[in-house]
Length: 399
Image (cartoon, rainbow, N blue to C red):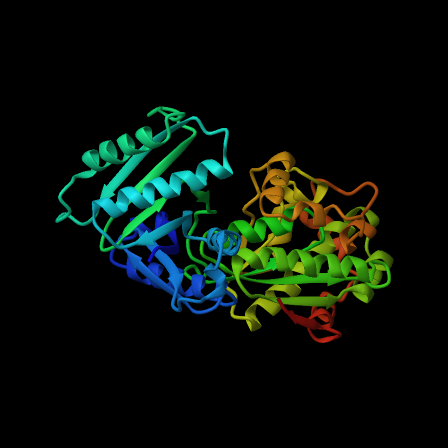
């Protein structure tokens, strides 16, 4: 009996050498976690492909096209997957393949009556099958032309491609949904993301997760100067990032008194730099406790005053962990495009300001020197501020 399955294609994982098995195992683990709400599923891997189907005949997740497409969307959000297709799986000889192909095309044309041209592509994994791949294409294509006279063949730019695969079972599918590529999360250690309510930092978290890094996040909250809506906005952004990165802990630091002390005791043109330095130190201490090996920020070189080369260097000096800045060479438009791609943009532009924007300097120093930061921090008890941020009023939310 024919039934729906999902065919997922691996990408960069297949280029790994002796440790490829570790990457494949992590990818399947991540898929199981991402699909855990869709009933009992069988997830098997063969060469560069992963097959996902119901373990039980009556699994509601595969009951119909729409339900299956929900799983398809979830699969393509898992890093390590290049693309995925909803396929029909069935047993039988070539006569059955012809019958199922004609039925498949009939349903496809009912959904897309504007389709006029097609192409057949075949793969024969079962070498005992009597027809090779070109012969399968010719025979199936000929039958489609006979039964659907309004269709014609276009091998260069068809309206749809019918894919036929002959393996231990037969498979039919048309089209694919592109995934986010990358490496499976969990294969490249763990990082702590400095997450604000803006556009940049969620994209930075997404990009590092795409390289296999597990993510936790820290948000600096200055209530009542930043509202509860601003806090909820960051929680919502963390949820969006977690669609791709998996579960994370969001550390919410009570930053109000620390920030007020800075405003009172530090030169106005250096507040942004001193604030970033303290944030990084608090984030590093939380990262150590969470077993993170790096910090992640959404900074882009030259985008704002605190992101000049001099400012970045002076900010980096206060931590020992590497600070990853995956957006460093991107302009704002490119970052906005990525934000839209991952579904974060509309949330990021909600008009709830974070602590960085509320206390921003009107005329910040863009090229700070060491003497500037020494003067700016001379009246600040940085150690006490860091300890206060880590230990006083810290809230941890599991996303």
